[in-house]
Image 1: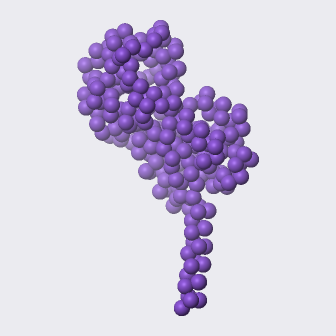
Image 2: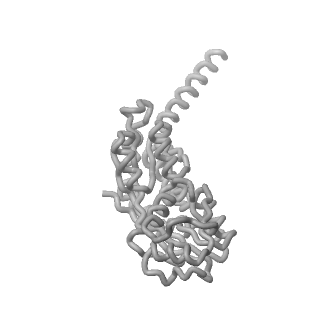
Image 3: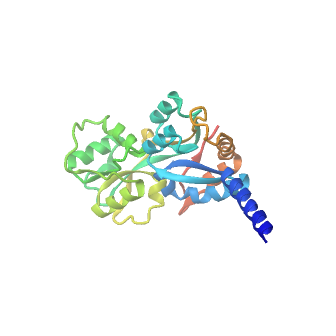
Length: 265
């Protein structure tokens, strides 16, 4: 009996070790998670590669910090300037583009700031500021927040007034706040399409090339953190840039509208 239990315990330990060897941690943005695409990709990744990808869902700024600390094996984010700085500092081995969509401006269907008639993204933001209409910002150092601030920097708006509300929250939570306040907000298209609590909000402005939103995969540098699972991050990258990944990403739709476009090279 004792011998049987010893064999069983050994088998359990071996199985647990094998399971741990097939697990990796990846920090992803809240916008990626809110899109629902992870629910499509992760089961297929595990079925094809045996890799169980555990997601840490945070803003881009926090995802990069997790990578710097070696708390994750890879990150999937969308802020090119911050990504380039991460790679230049040696925290990641390289940057691989995977897919893109775009940012859009959401607001009350009555559109008191008239942004639906704007010709550019910066003109839309200036219209919101001039009207004093309520605007909700992610305010969380995410890729979306970084992009929003870069757009404000290109406007004639020199200061934010009481109309500007920094939520300090992820994309889904910020959209919920905007819905409750009947406010304007900048969102990635995927999160908006998958958002259920739209209330009186509509997509009012899109199409300016500056609203392009690229997502990239960055493996954490194992030379800095020897516990990083470089073999699994490489396998995952191969899968994410495969034809199967392309078909799943391009084929992911809500109400017939695509949320992402695969563009891995």
